[in-house]
Amino acid sequence: MAFAASQIVRGFSSSAVRNVVIKNVTIIGGGQMGAGIAQVAASTGHSVTLVDTSDDILKKSIKLIEGSLKRVAKKKFSDKPEAGEEFIKKIVQKVSTSTDAESAVQGSDLVVEAIVENLKIKQDLFSRLDKLAPSHTIFASNTSSLSICDIASSTNRQDRFGGLHFFNPVAMMKLVEVIGTPATSQDTLDSLLDFSKVLGKTPVSCKDTSGFIVNRLLVPCMMEAIRLYERGDASKEDIDIGMKLGAGYPMGPFELADYVGLDIVKAVIEAFKTKDPKNPLFDSSDLLNKLVAEGKLGIKTGEGFYKHK
Image (cartoon, rainbow, N blue to C red):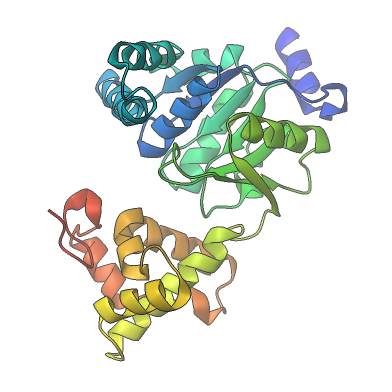
């Protein structure tokens, strides 16, 4: 009976749950993005729980955070190494780790998911967590390509569900896309926008459309560059130079694809295609598919469109 009552309460509109002040943050996924989000949240005074499937992964996550903070401390405390060490220690102490997502979310104001770009896996995760997180807890996905509506449909808190799309590397990139669905309450959106600003980021709002703002424009541009190269119209090197010097891009489309990861680029464009199958901008690439099948994913594997040492 008590369980049934709690489920009914979770299903109500969050109009009674006014702007949640986010203090305790749980991040699901200890990869590069998850660790980066954990770092910026801890750096701005939030209590952070970082969750993944094994202690080994989480140890690597903490090392990623420490490595990033060391670079910050080197610049910020160049003449005071002891102060730099204290700076790192203080932030890392704000991050606890866990392999038990269900327990971790029970004290959270915000749960941010940063796991594999697979709709069913995300839905299954949020469905489980929805039964245990407090009624005021906001859920957010860091997905770069999947529909927030589709992910949120697995929960009974669609009014307290939104997108928080950070950019890599999280500590350096100022932008956060805040995504609302037709069901997302204004209070939830305001809380996510406020949270982003507290992190020192610049939030932009967008409806739940394929790729949101940045990837909706950027990924088709990368795909067009790949097709240009596939047709033999120009070399990848010249395409990269052309976009850097002619369009002011800091990285050319092939350099960027290697940096992002060719598997990610492939997953994003396939997600777009699923939503809008007749749009030629979302067509796949034989060359991209071949490189991914060969495990040549870019910088993270040492080779993609380019070879990386």
